[in-house]
Image (cartoon, rainbow, N blue to C red; front, side):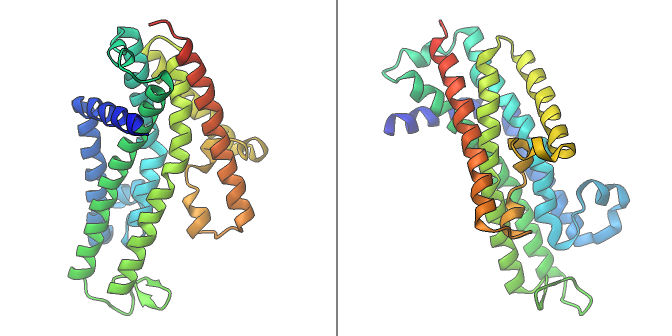
Amino acid sequence: MKTILTAMQNELLKIFWRPKYIIMVIIYALIGLGAGFVSISGNNLGTISEFIFSLRGPNALYSALTTYRTFLVPLAVFMLSADVFTHELESKSIKCVLVRPVSRLDVYLAKCLAMLCYIAIALGAGFAVVASRLVLSAVLTPSTPTDTLIGSLPYNSSLSIISMIIEGLASYALTLAPMAAFIAFAAFIAVLVHSPALVMFLCIISYLALSFFSTFNTLVGAALFTTYSGWYRMWFGYRLPWRSLLTTAGVLLSTCVAFFGFGYFIFDKKDV
């Protein structure tokens, strides 16, 4: 375990050594800043901003999360897989890792965990900014009888703001589960082909195709991991029974295990 953690830390440092991934975290934070700003100013920014984010009031946390999980996180995962796996295999720089006293399984697992940790940091940056702006909104905007209600309390009351932020934090954390399936899938494609550009192309095309089936074919979509990128809504929004939650968790876990296993098998057979 200590070996895996050390290898994961090294992989994470290599990720942040690339400026584009630091810029991407900043983009997450800027989107969160925009979410909080729109939540304070209401409709003053115009219909286009509200159409893209729908970030008024208590919806800011979840609308920003929808933007993250639908567009930015998959893009970040595909970029990471191309750099962490394909680029290092193509350039043979991965030899510097494999010559260390660490198994290939540990290396593969550490790379996947580092990708997941990066996604957690990026989502955390976005959440922190949105949450801080919502708190600022509650401080600056006095409660009125016409405010949106959460239960019996106005949304900008202290208790409801705390409850909203705790629930939002849990939703962001739950989003990491389907993102782990995205990482396993992207890592499998990354070790399967030999070009980072081709990895990006195949990942994006596959994501669009799976998203299409997830949206327009209920029977097929129920078995696809892309269907459950917003599964936090099953916990807090629709409040489905435990059997449905366990079924969804089983789909995500089986996807992770299957793609991780296939990906590691190919990675282990690579001649570098």
